Amino acid sequence: MVPLRIGVAGLGAIGRIVTRALADGMPGLELACIAVRDPGKARTWLEQQSIPCPIVKLEAMPSHADLVVECAPASVLEDICRPMLSARKRVMVLSAGALLPRPELLELAKRKGGQIIIPTGALIGLDAVTAAAQGTVHSVRMVTRKPPRGLAGAPFLVDNGISVDGLGEPLRVFAGSAREAAAGFPANVNVVAALALAGIGPDRTTIEIWADPGVERNCHTIEVDADSAKFSMSIENIPSENPRTGRITALSVLAALAKLTAPLRVGT
Ligand SMILES: NC(=O)C1=CN([C@@H]2O[C@H](COP(=O)(O)OP(=O)(O)OC[C@H]3O[C@@H](n4cnc5c(N)ncnc54)[C@H](O)[C@@H]3O)[C@@H](O)[C@H]2O)C=CC1
Ligand SMILES: O=C([O-])CC(=O)C(=O)O
Image (tube, rainbow, N blue to C red; front, side, top):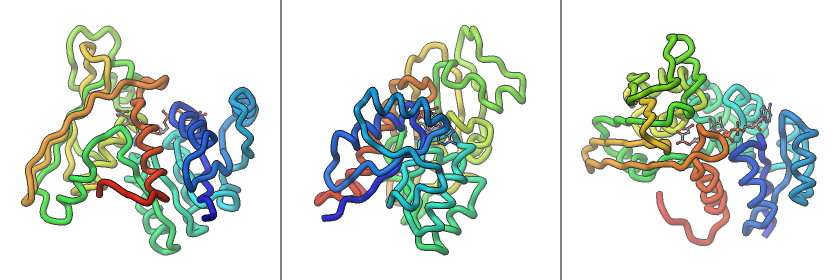
């Protein structure tokens, strides 16, 4: 079988784990190329890790890879997706929040025959949400609690003069729709964008965001009410080297990649 060629865009907390695992070998998959902001730094890391892999520009990825894992800042999403989708290829998107204001990327995938894949990432239960969405979902509510350092610097906090420094007790910093949350917290709540796209969309999916000095983990609770089932789910994510990103996110990417070529697929 010809291996599926995988490119990695962004060599940060998620990208390095994914690159290491691909280089170690995943059945049916091959590490094909990497695109980064700082090629010198990436080259040093690849040499330290003894990983032979070409570093290419974002726009050159379609000629090297069949699928690119986007694990870069939200601001770069379009530069990664556009060339791949125009070439009828696939992109696994981690910066899911940046997809909400860019429906034209979904349109491009549809028109060209490419595909955008959003892994469950730092979340839980998107299998149940997508299944319920085949019927009627009445409501999807989410509550996120993060250590204040996992929210610091978010545009919504800066724009509204909300400080999360030295908090003595939990502070609800946001309540609103998934669409508003993704715009105000582009690097902090991609999870709610993924949830919205799995279920009832970014305007009907709601979220509260709490800066909580009493938690060490990124905690997400989801409540879904549908005509097929009512369910609630919680996950407590141990932060990675990037305090905004749970460690499980990179593992979710590996699981989603493995599913692409596996002889057995479990879950929706
Ligand atoms: N969907 C989900 O469940 C989750 C999504 N995320 C999102 O995934 C993305 C990656 O997260 P992390 O790895 O933690 O971020 P990170 O900040 O650790 O790494 C991002 C990397 O992208 C690189 N980069 C910047 N500009 C670039 C460019 N033009 N081309 C290629 N690379 C570039 C940066 O230098 C950095 O190394 C972020 O947007 C984050 O918000 C994070 C956690 C969960
Ligand atoms: O959604 C995100 O961007 C990150 C997140 O909440 C987590 O890792 O728990």
